[in-house]
Structures are given as structure tokens and as C-alpha cells.
Picture: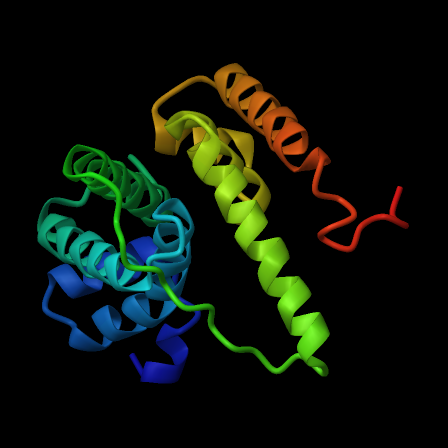
Length: 196
């Protein structure tokens, strides 16, 4: 099958093709999934890009190792990969807690904002959100990130987290309320004083 045509092939079929030795399928699947895994790991790990890249590589390696035994229809590739990524991130965060606080600060990534003030405000908002997310219990943090940042549905999140849909709703609702409470006193500082 031509490379361009393969870009429309579902993830599960690409994984099966890779398991049969199709390197092009692996490239397409990596290009499709790696940015999503990296973004999820980056958020779960509090903005540590180097660790998020390590987690992304490890999660994709696990996918390639699982490919020969993959059973179509049991789980979506993305759901499986989000679960593996989340578990790797949680393991990494637990190791951090045991090792003590990380003294290295990750520099903010510069963007193409039209003014320095807007760039600083966007960075302050992102940092405030990340700090607020980091203050949540792990399960609430994971549910909020998957639902409100990654945009996954509650059934997808339930499968990733291996819990029921009602538990997802509860976790996301509690997490969202906690975020609002944490950030409530910072509205003016973050430039939201006129927003209601």
C-alpha cells in the first residue's frame, strides 16, 4: 500500500501491519501518536520536557513490543497507549517524591505572541494551571488532564484509568472544583478580573 494511502488507515490496522514487518506502518503510527503521548506526559509530569520525551519513547517501545500479540477489538491503540503513558508518569512522579524535590527549573518555551506582556501573561497562566494541577491528587489530576486538556470522553478515560464512568465524572468534577478553588484568588493577577 502506498505511504500516502496508509495515513488514512486506522491505528489498529497499522499496528498489525507493523507486527507483520511493515516499517512504513510504524513510521506513520509514530508520527500520529508520539505528539499526543508527549503532550500528555508533559502535562502529567508538570512540564518536564526531558522526562516527557523519555516517557514517550518508553511508551512507544512498549507498544512495539506488544504489537505481535495485539488482539484487535480488545482495546483501541490510543486508549492502551494513554494508559501506559499515565502509568509510566505516575511511576516517575512517585520516584520524584521519594528522591525529594527537583531543583532544576524547566525554562518556559518562547512562543510567537505579538507582545512581551501577552507572552508573560500566557506563561503565568500556564504556570498557574500547572501548579494547580500539581496540587491535585494523582487520580484527579489524571482525569482532569485527560478530559479537559486532552479532550477524551468519559468512557475512554474510564478505560484508560480502569475505573467506571461515574468514577471519572466524580474525579473530574472534584478536580475541576479544586482547580477553581486553588486559582480563585489569582484571577486579577492572571488577567481575568473583567471575565465573569
